[in-house]
Amino acid sequence: MPTTESADNDQLFVLTAVLLTPAQFPSVLGDDYPEVCAGLGLEPYAEGYGLVLGQDGDGARWTVVTEDVSLVACAIAAWDCGMEYDLSPGENSIVGALPGWPLALAVAAPGVPQPHDPEPQEGDPAPLTPPDAEEWGPAQRRLGADEIAMQWAAWREQVEGDASFAEPGDQAHKGVRRVLEEARGYVNDPPPPGRVRSSFAAGEARTLRVDGPGWSMVARTDDIAFVLLDEEPGEVHPVGRGPELPGLLTSLDELSTRPV
Image (cartoon, rainbow, N blue to C red; front, side, top):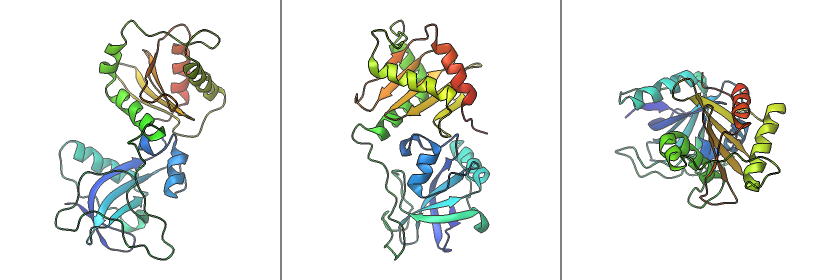
């Protein structure tokens, strides 16, 4: 089991780690990078952070925040390949140790008590807790968009030949029209970092994740888009390419944040 040192030098049994940067952050926590940082009580620095989730010797949940983003990225890459990696951020890189976990984990450190929040100390922030993603709402909507991005081929097959581009003023779904209008607004008035993210896709295409108040959009720059809305639980609206979607997606990709 990897270990690291928390801000008060207590040993931490590391369970997992995630990146928190303008281009890569857990979507479940917010629509953009500054929103996620605010929820964790962090300044939205452009360089970002690494979040190390683990338990102390008493089993208490802790989230260690480090500025050593490269170290956390290397650890995640190694773990994804099934390799061992001892994630131990240097003391000078640690911003702080926050009680609780911002994400739900189904694992626990062996040989210590079951995960629980640490005993509160005077002046400590409230323990972090994962967003409620059981009921439809912003967290589940963003998780749904993540799933579409990861399973693009399967979702694309379901709408083959059925997608139609929604234009303002036509008879298309008004919620979809609103999303497209707000996404177009991003081109002239760029949103906070992380609202528009771009990652690799097949060939020379890019996968776009675009979020806004009450909505998420997933698209391929060479294909269609999918829209999810807070007000329509579980519904996924396909948006065909038509004459204007390609240009919109290209413009959004140009202003997007991308993983380094």
